Amino acid sequence: MRHSFHRQLVFTIKDRCRVCFTCVRECPVKAIKIMNGQAEVINDRCIGCGNCVRVCSQGAKIPLRSVDAVNELLQSKSKIAACISPSFPAEFEEIPDHKMLVGMIRKLGFDFVTEVSF
Ligand code: SF4
Ligand code: SF4
Image 1 (cartoon, helix red, strand yellow):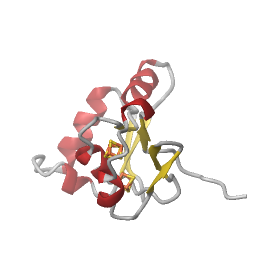
Image 2: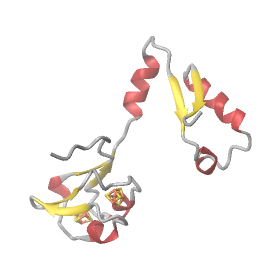
Image 3: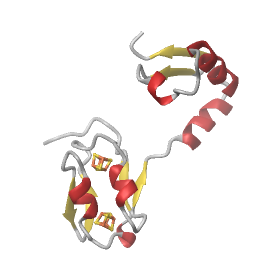
Image 4: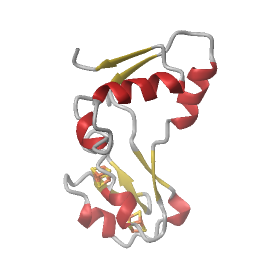
């Protein structure tokens, strides 16, 4: 039996899917199949690029949203660490100094900030 070890990053809302095949064609890693009358994401293949979310005219593809879970963590009494991906300089181009980013994340309520590979 095949197991999936990562969380599903994109979901399909079945009622909204018109089975137009746009997302199937546009997925760069062929991770979408028509199954049970909807365009389903094959979790093991999906790289979470978000392309299907962008191209679906029906709003049937919904990305995983972890904002609420993070907010809950921040409001808890536990010590919270933010592990930042090494690709952060590309995502936060407008922030000239990485120390500034660390300060911003600390201000959100994280107790520790570290780069994930470190
Ligand atoms: S693009 Fe949207 S409507 Fe078309 S098959 Fe994919 S999920 Fe369904
Ligand atoms: S997020 Fe990207 S890789 Fe995943 S199913 Fe959508 S288009 Fe394919």
